[in-house]
Amino acid sequence: MFDCHIHMRTLESDRGLFEQRLQDSGITHAMIFSLPPQGFSRKYPVCTNNERLELLMDFCSGKEHLYPFYWINPLEPNAAEQVSAALAAGVSGFKIICSDFFPSHAAAMEIYKLIACNNKPVLFHTGILWDGKVSSKFCHPIEYECLLEVPQLRFTLAHVSWPWFDTAIAVYGKFLNAQITGNASCEMFIDTTPGTPEIYRREVLTKLYTIGYDIFDNILFGSDSNTANYNVEWVRQWTSLDRRILTDLNIDKMLQDKYLTENALRFIKGQKSNKNIPIAGV
Image (cartoon, rainbow, N blue to C red; front, side, top):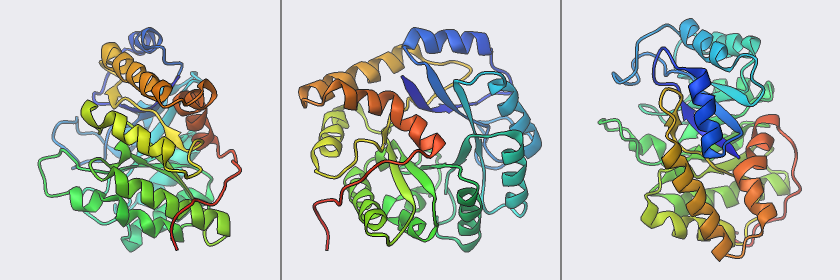
């Protein structure tokens, strides 16, 4: 299984212990986010962008099942240089939280285009952002329609944009239609990382899997855990719950395995998928 949503939260993590906890959780592959850019939150240690990148790459070094994602603020004056440095270091992709700017900001759009032309994916936080600030308006899924204007971009909206998951699914339908009809070349994924409290889980998975959109290759599983204290019980709880819900929905094992493993690999590597036009829209 593939966990597509794991944070680095400290300057030091025991990789051996982390990998043992992955194994105990049944996780075989993991996407690792660097520490955030300076100023994002006082909860994180302060370090330079070069230090953040070095910590990330050192943690993932020599481990083909660990995929490093560099967290970037696309409005920083040297954002393009950060992207180039991260690419040269061998990152698998990028993470972005639009916490105090709209995704459509002109400077941010240029960074997305730079990432896309280098064939790397982007994971965006979407949904309510628990940061103690007035920020969630920037993370509403409707704001990400601007990515239709970024050729070849692969991106995912994390946390199913909770509580706006109906809108996130509708936005996915719009991107799917644009991709199939040739009006856009970008591709959207949906990351189901909680986000969604358990009481909403059956509803959101039911809507994702039964809406009638060609979405089965574009749903990702993540835990929102971290490298310093990977929570085995938490991960087991969510994977077990999701398996149970999908089985109740008569979703066969092949599609469940895509959700829990293969789709994340496709997201990272950019493998193509044949798509059908969604049954909706104008």
